[in-house]
Length: 376
Image (cartoon, rainbow, N blue to C red; front, side, top):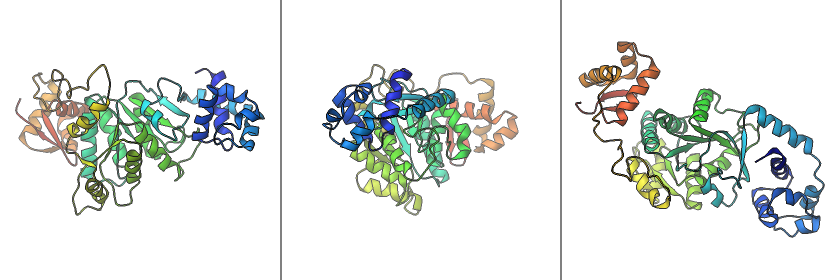
């Protein structure tokens, strides 16, 4: 959308009293946002939710310099705006009652994204992180796009798992796209931009205030076919995401945890309340695939001729993979020990081990330990 048109979207959203629902009602009533600003007060007041005060504020809007400054800042920061009229706006999100009229985007959205959300505790256990990375890696490998909130713990593990499979992932922030939170995820932020997109409904400069995160959660669930809760305490924000997902008609999945773990009480409670217990990606995909109309099937699931993550590998190992396989065939080894013994860089080893795990040659255990899955 060109800047001349986009300025009206930014202006309307900045009018005091025009929330997401009122914005949608005005857009439906007048057909386009520029037409809203050209309408008289009397016609504006006929729209549900538009008071006389709001109508007057629209007609007499004068803050165009501020709108222009935002457009210039967006261009400088390389941030795009995708409106609900754009083809790249997440299609599932269009069905959400209080959807944002537009979202800020860095990276690339695609119309083919099959979004599956994965969220959980910030104070995640080793088991939780391992399970999250494994599930998200396999989902991404099969063609799904992993959606999460880039928070500490489970969220970060979800993004990293998808990236390790060279798949797509989308992060939804509770701040402006120029305010990276948590700050230690700056590198992860850039990796997500390169392997998907980072999105937010909040303008640039918005700090990560507490009320922003429940709002952010409705977008995570709203743009996805289903939500996977990996670890959650009894009062976890992830349970809010699960509730929102149910209200939006999305599938809710939960990974079971130890009955002695406080971090699993929320997920175990969700299972008792009817969330689907999952043990692998097939448990997720068999629920959402019937909802999806697409030209290409997900890899390794609905099309038997494609590669399955757990299939035996007939390919020959390269020299680096063979060396790693020989080591983990003798005993279970930690990744740090593999780096020390081989002299390979951590990035090269992670890439090789990820490839080998997806081929079914090695298995990753909690704590970044690896062993041979089978003989080659």
